[in-house]
Image (cartoon, helix red, strand yellow):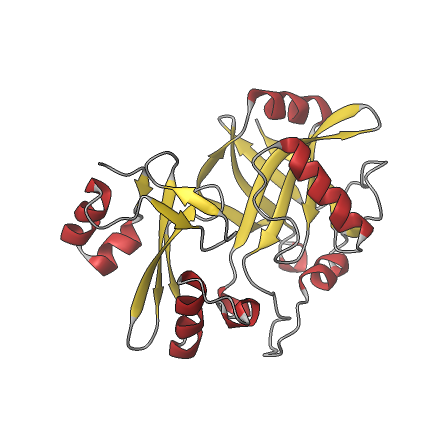
Length: 260
């Protein structure tokens, strides 16, 4: 049975047209899988699924992810990291958090949803990396994702009783009703640059677009890897955000809306 697979041009270039076509036809792709990003089950016969190719020095491993978690892409890793990824993909979770892709290979997972604050719905983006984020220039095992964002002006969130303050200089780019990027200030006062850019423009709900148009801003929440996960419903997403805030693992800011 054909699969609902996304095979990017770069993945196709690596595995070849013949193998890519066999995947799309369902000959070599699994029906069910564990998402390589959020580690929850997926079904390529029922939902859009991304092919993610991990390439080491000598070997390569093809993994699968919910399209909402990761775009189809090629991720280059060391052979040691690849063996860790193989263990993770195959279900050997012993130490899996430290053995997945290295910090510099981390991908930002972005989820959109409506968040109720003080009786009003706000459009929100929840950002969570797929691996710990190290401070540039360091090789340590620590996770500096939240400290790096706090240095940029994001604020720690203790609860979701009030909307976070606006962070000027950053913005969320919407075009033709789809989410394209999160923009940050350019170096030395230059034009804005993409902090995160969608591999393909992400669809958002009509309610989300309406709320964004009303408020002319989007709330961005960010949490370290493993904090939020992929939540299929907005009430579960809110529960995860509340828990992250209570545990001191959430930062946020209001980002002005760019585009239409």
